[in-house]
Image (cartoon, rainbow, N blue to C red; front, side):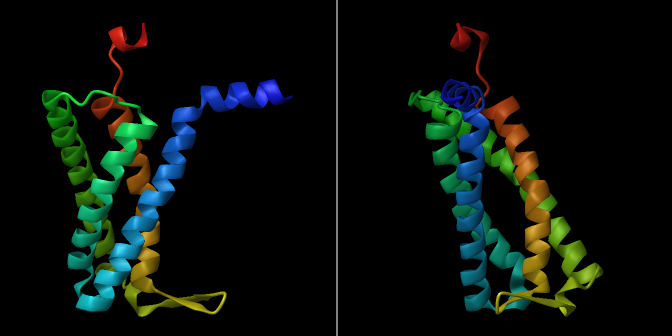
Length: 157
């Protein structure tokens, strides 16, 4: 039984660590978003989202490089290529996120609603951010796995 669990952890290590650091990145993003929303006002939610995106993408690059996809090279040309690819891919998912937020907050008017969970009030804007985050996490995983930190055939040997 223990050997089976160990082999599953080894087999799915990348997915497990992506999940752990994905949650951590999401927390960084949501905390940054909330702080920016408090400072700027909730009506500037798209600007708050830009700030949250920058902070969380920097955090995500570092954790994805070092612990999720274990890209060990620190050669400037490799790091530069990864950074450009990472920010470009995250830029795409950022556009998806901004568009999704706009559609849910302004078009679908979720900002008019509020949810109370365990005595915490969650605004419609935050509910929209949570919904869009699910889509963004999936997009980000596939871009990172398939394009940014992809292992070359020589790396697997």
